[in-house]
Length: 279
Length: 187
Image (tube, rainbow over all chains, first blue to last red; front, side, top):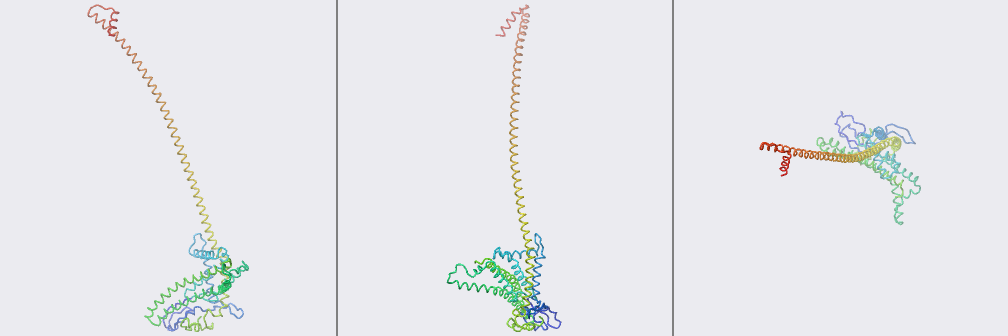
């Protein structure tokens, strides 16, 4: 969620602000940059309790639902014409894009996991892109979400690899052509990197989203801060951070897509290990 | 959400000051109190998405793409078939044309030869006819000339008899006159 903190005229007659904006403008001078606020989890209503945990429908849940709804509309409401329209083209391009990614990295056998990888890619991509819209929430800016998705991939790879190849699956830890005296070290590194995969897999996505949104928020906040603190001079000075915010927003759109793609292609590469363990 | 106007100055200060509300402070992504809610909603919505994608969305879009692929391939084979047909038709037309041309030439040669032969025969017949007529004409001329010549002798004999009678008053003997005319005709 980017909150550009659009300046509001100081005074009691200030416009009502949308909920969730950082630093409520009771007094414009009080407006501060709070780049962390956008990541707050706000329970909207309680669903129930598991143990002593309260399970609530939060703003994060809402944006997960939004992402699922957008993907469903895109994939189910687009036409089925022979010559596709715009929406149908988007749906077909996403289909072909993910399918070709799987085929090129995990081979034709990887198409078994097409629904999983397509769901992962579209879920991350759509929720990231929605998250760039100001005042929204970015689902993948929370480590717990990306970690859950990465562990889902990790256990899918582990379980499918063992189910399909049995003990041969562990050949992924023993590369070919390594001298015997160095093998234990290599195996140790391979095993370590295998178990660190979910960490890098999840932290990469989480950190990219978090850092991008913080940077956006900081630069956008400068615009308002300069405007309020320095008056006319500040408005002129605010042009630079505003331009930076615009540039960063376009960069973030790229990052949003790219991180979804990276997540999907790493999933394919990990699944390729499960399908063809013999390096 | 509404409580959080703690006034953090930046990322560094945010850690302690941001969000003075019911979350107990701290950096939101690391607040373990929200993990259960997030995990449950992620599980619900991701499973929902997976079911929608695997049961409805991918078969639908994949079916459309496959149908298009089949249609394109079908159209291409259809076009290839039509082209083969038209190629065959063109070939048949060309061979038909060639044979027709050959036949036409043969007919032309034949009729020209026939016409030539007929013309030759007619000319020969005409020439023979003409030759016969010419011979007849020459015969007639010769007989006419002989007749004329014998008439000339009679006339000459008569004229000689008259001349003698006029000069001498004596009617000459016809035999002697004839002999004299013959003699002078020979001379």
